[in-house]
Length: 417
Image (cartoon, rainbow, N blue to C red):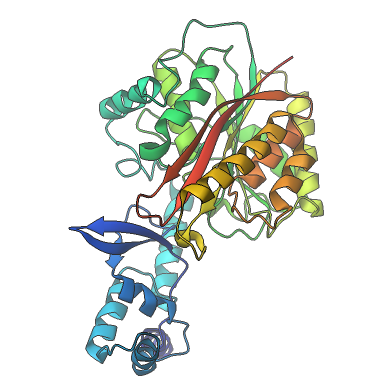
């Protein structure tokens, strides 16, 4: 116990920041930065100034509080008191944002709670989208009729079968109308009986894929997981498909798809369906050339081919991430957005043609300079649907008015035959 207290004191006196998402925001006319923890997105965010953000960048676990103050002075020419440094460090510690035994204990608590939970909770409800079912239903309905939406809710059902969708995973406040394009197409098609959900994992993963047997809960009720399918797939795979299962807890890429699928059911536009939820790791850590990636996709393709049910693969995948928020030195400009538009549309044309390898090479040809965060799920979908040809329904760019960031996303549909 004394040793643990010593470690905690050391972590506090020589602070090191855990990986966090930094989002620019303006409060009362002041430029601030929101620190968001991927592990606990429902926790109130911590807001810091530009100077505070610089101080955070200096917290490498080597500098004590005095050296942090000195380093800040050398970089800015402005002095900062030890009291100010200590105040910020204390706030970070209370928010579990420091690498420390305290945050490790919190992580262990979260893992245990997730393991014991009967369902994967709708953790983003009430934040990224309304948590009240009636309010959520009205919000999603408005996405179909929004100026950027498809013009209305799903029309009369057809005999067409949707075998694949690329849909956004950006928060619904920004991407709702673009989601509506994809899910209107699905709502007008013959209902699938099994959906394979392929989503980007924004947190680091030790393995290329992570599945869960838990149902994905939503404000409209749970989307049931096909437990037998997932367990059979895991038993055939030489890697551990559940080693990174905890990543499902806070990841939004599949939760938002589950919300839209349950919405279509609520509207009577989708029949009973089971899901196979799979998170995909970054291809920078687990490229397609890695044997475990090829093995898993081959096994999943084999298992799907043997299943007699109607199936639809859905990739929850955003596209480009550019601007200073993501590491670029220059602010987002009209010229940059035009360049990204051309490059994204070229990439989407390749994806719509069903060319998995061509899509991957297009993204990686320049070292993934646009930071296409949906590479892994889109590549996986294309590998699993080698004969499919798609149609780009909608392409959208969202740009922060202050030039800090721009994110792009799209809806693409793949029909059978």
